[in-house]
Image (cartoon, rainbow, N blue to C red; front, side, top):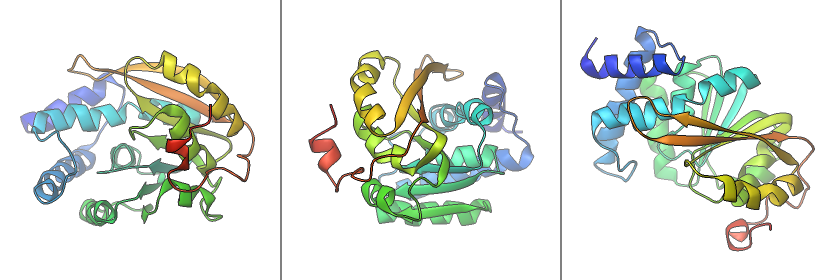
Length: 240
């Protein structure tokens, strides 16, 4: 095992995520593709290999204990970008059916290459705005779990994400260390959209001083038909 592989393996061990040889290989192949494609398009500002292991892969894998506990087979990653957190989650939990959704087609082209190159099965890569996807009858309220590491205020992100979640399912938003004000602001929007904020868990990335928050929202009732609103509306006029 190379030093880089060992770093990932040990970091994951600290968050109770066990990886086998195939999974370690898949993460290394993913890292190589990420760096290769990053030279021709903007996928990540993190290009140091050790930092990719920790700040991308180990960070995303902190979702595993939560997704394990919540159960469910179908997962959608909204605003996936370069595949975070959906691809690491899929590698670590191959039994999951994962949909990667992003509004930029060139990112979807990259993700299709990742899926093919890593031999991942039961993964769909969709070029769609979240607002359009959430209104699509084939996607609306079809998923057990929605995850997102996208950068947006929680009230806005909830309008993007909760329409995808089945009643009884969950939306997990990956946020920075201090989200108390943001979650308080978002409570009304979350309730209107059919959800309730169940818990905010702190998660420290092994080998770093970075602490993230996992905001866990349960879908209690169907999202009203008027949501999500048309493209750009949620951001310009968030529910308050």
